[in-house]
Amino acid sequence: MAKQDILIVEDSPYVAGAIEDAVGTMGYSVRVAGSAAEAFAAIEECVPDLVLLDWMLPDLEGIEVLQRIREGAHPNLPVIMLTARGELQAKLTGLEAGADDYLPKPFNLGELKARITAVLRRRNPS
Image (cartoon, rainbow, N blue to C red):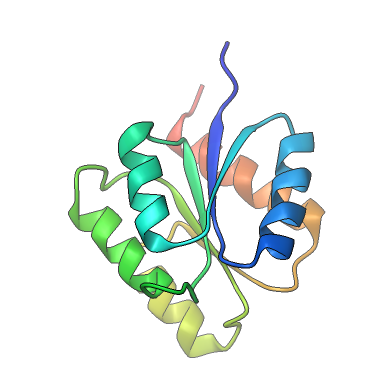
């Protein structure tokens, strides 16, 4: 069985690298996009099983990326928002825009793993 593919959309190379290392040790195949444009290109190249999406990106807000995913060719693509925007209104906005989950930074890697597993299990029950 092929490894499940996770796309990390994060503009900070340090944060992206830390998430990439952590998610990679969980047994997933991992790709990183540093901008919305890179994320859209990566999704079109090979649709991932899940996207970990930051809110604050250099070319487009993550919430807009999420909305475009929901309105585009892959509306059921699982997306977990991983962002420094931890206030209640931001969480509500992300979830109402279609995020499957929302995890504010800083986060615990064990919690991230559990949330990834839960979202993928809901999308692929078996």
